[in-house]
Image (cartoon, rainbow, N blue to C red; front, top):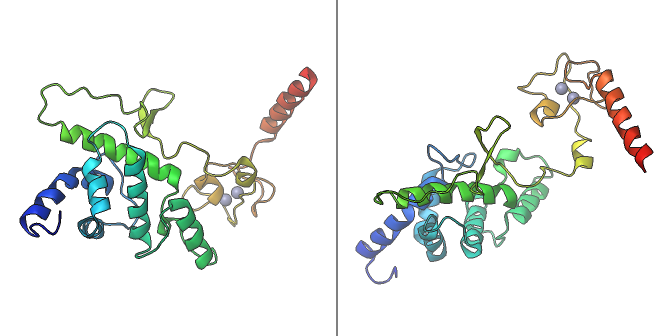
Length: 229
Ligand SMILES: [Zn+2]
Ligand SMILES: [Zn+2]
């Protein structure tokens, strides 16, 4: 389609991809990927018909078809590593992490496939609403019905960052911090990961440590479970 009329035709086609691309690359309701702007994304889309088609399809229905997500996943890989042959976010994360021997900030890595899916679902939902903006009474499902958001205990909407666990429990339990004087939410790796400090942390007796009575209660629960067996 790009050969037909470079100026007019391509502009029209790119226009139809803009609602999806704008939502996906960050708008009022959908977050942006760390340090990934809109210009690079737009240039990539203009240069690749597959990506162009994927963002044109984004928001055309309330679901994200597998082929659309696969194209967007490949597109994401290109954003983080131009000209890479890798098309899976998880394996690109692994390759980039290994290439830097682990000396890389998590914000420099692409999101994992799981959280990329949730992000794409939110962008799709927003684009779907925009694409129906001329309908009188569009039939809009709840954002918490599998569109990248969920309800918290109080019934408020919150972002569903991922569907699975950030890491297996056994790995999360190994996280420790190296805080010297106090564990603060701004820089304590335990608190940042929503974990309590443990005996493997450098600072002992901080306010983020698991309290002894909580451990006793946990032990009591555990032994209750054992006695049932
Ligand atoms: Zn700490
Ligand atoms: Zn700690």
